[in-house]
Amino acid sequence: MTTTSPILPTELEDLVELFDVAPTDSPTPDDEREAALASPRFGTVFTDHMARITWRKDTGWIDRRIEKYGPLQLDPATAVLHYAQEIFEGMKAYKHADGSVWTFRPDANAARFARSAHRLALPALSVDDFIGSIAALVRTDLAWVPGGEDSSLYLRPFMFASEAFLGVRPATEVEYLCIASPVGPYFAGGVKPVSIWVSQDYHRAAPGGTGDAKCGGNYAASLLPQTEAQENGCDQVCFLDSTTNTFLEELGGMNVFVVKADGTVHTPELTGSILEGVTRSSILQLVTDRGHGVVERRIPLTEIVDGLADGSITEIFACGTAAVVTPIGRLAGGSFDHQVGGGEPGELTMAIRTELTDIQYGRTPDRHGWMRRLA
Ligand SMILES: *Cc1c(COP(=O)(O)O)cnc(C)c1O
Image (cartoon, rainbow, N blue to C red):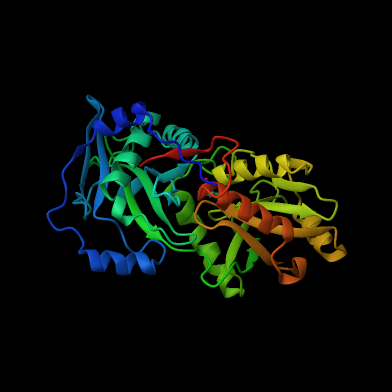
């Protein structure tokens, strides 16, 4: 079963045509590209081109183009290097069995990109330019979309303050780019549960801060606690709310779900310091479709720790575009250390993972109209 629609919407053609394509004079040789596609490691290999649009306060968005992938030359005073006025997105392009290439809910990413831009005092990029840039890049680098099982072309749209000045104010010059990197299965050799360290000392975001914007600064703040998690023998860090240090928020780059023995599914409600994941919102829909009770609310860490001890919590998983759904097999912190579901991936966790990837790879009908054909 595929989700192929025979024709591409003319409207998408119009968006793509706005981009001038200047092909690289030194494309990666076919054998080198094929070797890279055979065993891609996340975020290490990039395609031959990148999409780019320039913004100036007096012109708005100009110069939509696809150009050779390569280093950017930046003045040392470039604003982003000093005050971190930067945002990004993460998406994937999936090759279906018939060779067509699709992406998942790009409108949601485009809308979030605009919300992030607003919070970081950056100019909004239109949904049309966002989707047009991705389609134009994917079509130019079509040979880079892997066809293997659970492989995809990871897309990284981002925007930064490119004006060279050291004053503190929103930049009047901004660059938008989208780069692309072929990625293989996140879990080589099958899905393996990860261990999570709940940080007591650090937070990634605070009310009124930038936690619900997808900006590089949030990640910078998560790196030290992530190191601390690893020093405590865990794979990833989970943050609590910064006001009371008691409620579960999310991991450095993934949202989190809890499944109870009674079949209900719980996830921290969006309080302004949690990033609203597209995967999170899709999973909320899929578990609702399955008839589970779904609750978005504040979840105290104590409830999780007690629930793991008494067996009323059976599964915990993290989710995001890169890893899709990641089972959590162990949750530890200063005063507790519990296995989750005997350290094995949970049943619902894996069912949701399969259902979501089946939709993304066109192996099951796309009943919510989430997929958008790019090429
Ligand atoms: C990107 C991101 C997520 C996951 O979002 P998706 O849209 O599902 O990929 C979750 N938390 C943070 C902090 C993120 O940056």
